[in-house]
Image (cartoon, rainbow, N blue to C red; front, side, top):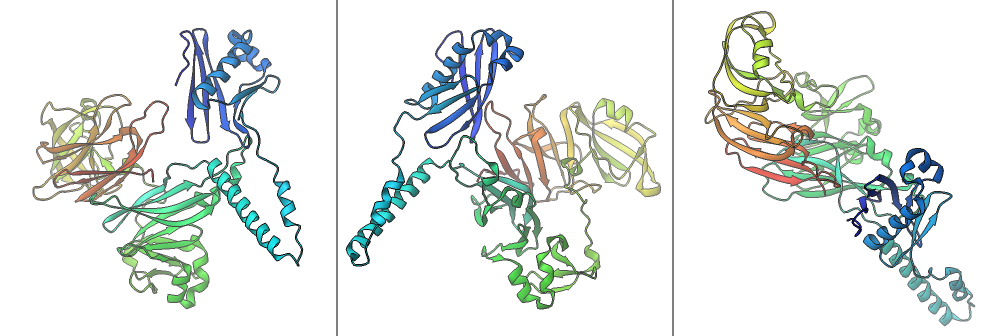
Length: 494
């Protein structure tokens, strides 16, 4: 909202418990930080001292008092009518204060506590008064508390059976103060489970509350074994998908009494299709989803994931081998002449560059296989003049082949809806000839795409919507039926 004057304006931006106040006029603009206060202090605006203005805002220094009065009056008019402002020019603050009288001194209530053992009736009355006062204080604290409207995603999401699991962190209600100490903030963490077909709004399962910020930094989802989704949060934990039942160290110890000492060290915990535990002698055991009993891990299930978080680019590639000697690629004219020209070598990797280039479908003829699966390119020919910005095929992971769809055969392609920074992610199903069967707009900002959870039936994308001025971008989870193109979307503000 802005002021009513024609030659100047004041805009208040809110970012939860704080924000900024922007003053503009034809000569220039000033930006001030603000935060909520406490007691009768509604908010405080940091405007800086006169010396700082003289150095950094010389155009406004001579009219400092006039500008501060404009800012104070507009903030009160727009946000807190009925309040009053105190301008501390020497310290550089505008303090917005309540116009009402402060609450009475609670020490006056002590008279009710002076009771005699012989006067039980007075004791009874005093007890009622104390309870009533406590309720009033509690109610006042609740009324003054700021409640964050929703939680936000914490870490990466994972597939868990027919659901997608996401940890949600929520800042618990707090009473604002002028000099708020962030170390006193407390958080709750929940598990959001959303059906991959979008058949329901999903369910939110509380996991922990009253956590310090550092206790949430190391929280992460490990994966789902088909029965339970496992996570690290102040130790190891799990939630049964069918019942929502919690599983923790106590249940794991009960099923494995000889391994009781090991469940307290999350560094020994890992996940590859099943929950795994590394014993002190470096033996690796895995947990049976049904019984929770540990047994030697199957050697065939060694971790194949990268040691760090996989990037979106690991799931995108430049083309697919339709047969050992036939290639379907997405290349720009520059790429076709530089990286995929006749005589160059085609490797197994072929990760697609995340570049703002317009690409076309190309058909390539490949020579005999050489070392490490490489083949020489004999020819590379465009299939049509149809162009797609920043296009790529979707694959299961780094170094793997693109996802192959059946009935009929096909592949998944992604590209930008528009040039520049405002484009969204488009997903399309294409056949071996580069013809599109269907395409859908995910609504995710193309360069804010944070995760791809690949699957040949329901593929999921996680990211944020395109930015809106003065607002946070909404994180969303989008699932697409690879067969029909049906799309389901869920917000991750929970």
